[in-house]
Image 1 (cartoon, rainbow, N blue to C red):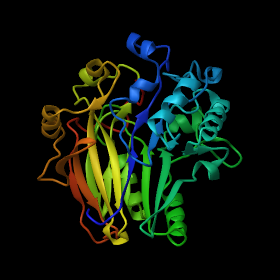
Image 2: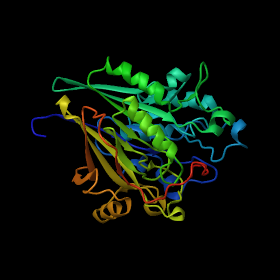
Image 3: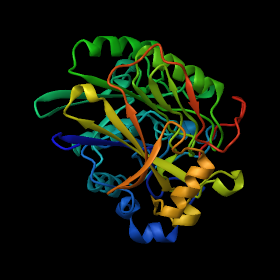
Image 4: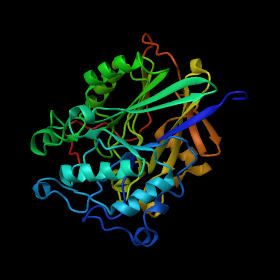
Length: 375
């Protein structure tokens, strides 16, 4: 990229803090090291870093949920906040299935502490309008203005809607529901007002440790039709399929980033990898962006709760077992951040492009009725 200024934005998946659930006491090493070292091996020098914050920053769970919802979580806010700041996290989505584990008071406390530390949050709020508001980052490169727009959202699940009262509504605080029609209207409006925008949807969806559901595929098609340039899913704890839908790159699930419970990689016989995702922009607005996927080892039984980039041998293993390689959508490479797979995201969507499926996951597809739970 000689003669061009480049700017990288890292987008990571699920982040949770130590001491998060009574069913999974923190490992001795994590207790001894504290929160900050959990990022040591996987944080790089990206200049804007949105992530998925999975754990509410409260110390007492909602008693109304205690006998109805499994895997309630909480954490110690102070060291968690310090670790996020030290890691350079600039923004987090709060749209997931744990952010109301401490009730709306816990959500408010989490947002207040994040914003006080200069970390933006999106995907949840005081009402449905606030919860639907995207993260917007405007920047200039050699005089060329660019905008990164990231939408958070949690797929609709009947139990969360009717039994847990999870989603934000008119004058009701809660989590933003993933809504393709709303996002389409927002994209249409923002496209007319923001300079050279790139629209990313960052949904929390899917079945734990399983393949892509038809519900995910249908929503991805709707989001692509809504004008999304890139869809980066999270929530299933593993890497799922990827494909192009009418010029929109879709990563159905990028797995865990930092997740402080043992996990079920061995029992579910799935590859122990997640992906850190980087978008690199150049000053030439017509050049689009370069998407890089950095495989990381996320099985805590292997890493002792300190996830890390893959080695050369593990990179080859990941390509063999996750079935992404030079013959598909992505081309392999290596840079200062580690081994990666690369795809150029065009600056202009080709709405006439054919679907180009590309399987990233070894796990078989499971029916939508499969149990949804976190561990």
